[in-house]
Image (cartoon, rainbow, N blue to C red):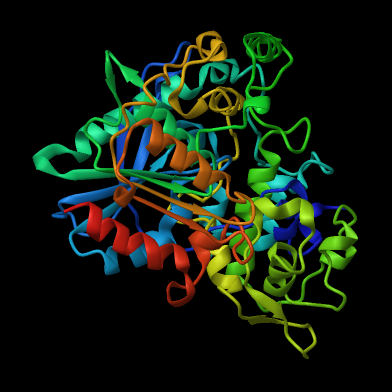
Amino acid sequence: MKLARRGSLFLATVVTGLGLCMSGSASAKLDVMTLKGTPAPGTPAMYNKFKVVKQGPAKAKKILLLEPGTSAGATNFRPLANTLVKQLKGWQVWSIERRENLLEDHSMLEQYLKGQASNDQMLDYYLGWIPDPSIQPHFEGKTTEETEYAKQWGLNMVVHDIRKVVKIARKGGRKVVLGGHSLGGSIVTAYATWNFNGKPGAKGLSGLVFIDGAGAREAADLPSAADAQASLDALKDAKASPFITLVPPLPWAAGVFNAMGSTAALQDPDSRSLMDDFPLLPATLKPPVSSTNLAQYAYAVDADTGPEDLQLVQSHIGDLASSGDPRGWANGQLGTAQRAAQVFTEIDGMDGTAWYHPLRLTLDAGAINNGIATPAQKVFGIRTTMGKRVHLPMYSFDTSLGNGRIKRATDALAAQSKVPKSWVRTVVRKQTYAHIDPLSAVPSKNDFIKTLVPFLKKQVK
């Protein structure tokens, strides 16, 4: 039985723990800058580069540069950035698309958006061939052997890629604020505290923004030198995947489900979902009634109806409609099902997920320690040692997932760098906000936007 015949597959993404996607029409075009990446050992030239998505007026004198989180891409900031550039006169928002996203194959997704392929054809191409190998042509994901070089794609590479972007952004006297969501917040700390030949990365920046992520752990959770070495030794094993793999042995499967499913959900939101018949979908993700594609998606990723173990993808977006067959979705609370989906879906050959997320990047990030040197940092080869020289305005936002940890990390970083309290703004919404809400909540209800905008206006003149 072909997977392509199982109806809407967007919730399969939720099964893998990623969920959501970002939107746009087939005709939408992004303002994208492609840069040569920091040299990474063994990496082919075609992958030794990365992209930056720009939003807002080209003549802007201030830039908010954003780094995505785990298994995320630049375009998951699009809804947020569209609002920020409207409310912040003279600002642009730049978002980094890390090089791992170049490994993806968006050919059939783009054909689907242009009306040149059906949903069945798209699903067959990406997944239907797995139970039916006769389907040709079909997507073939990168193997461990083909991507051995990606085991070197760690924090050192990412930080130096950011360095290139910051230097370009600062041209003409422009001011740059560096921000990040989730793991991206940890990378912000890494860059700001990185030792660049005796100078911290913070030098040259005008502020830091931490969105439910930061580069500090409780002391008991920090890796020792032995822990760090054991992690690297395990990664060096020839059979070990360079990437986080939520659906063994296919590291790309979660991202494919995500990009393909969310795109179909937004393109055909009102059709009846056939996910009740999808054998791999847990009962906890199924609405109690027959529902539309969009409603079933929303049910699974809503903070009230989705399961507790999917906090990474949840937002507050309403509830099932009170009537209808199939049952639709009634938007409410902080956002809408459509806006939540718009955080990740396919647009102009990109999507808000990373089908291949480098495991080395996540391992390295665990040792940042707010820029205070540890033995594990030496093992990983990261230089996050200038945590007492980050004299910058700082903003942080905690959701239920951050649970106050981001505030504590921000306050600690500010205190150890002797930053005036008037330069620091921390917002904690652990009772009312889920992890994706800062990116997806409608502007009129979004406390992240409502507090970040005045902070930037006040601190970055």
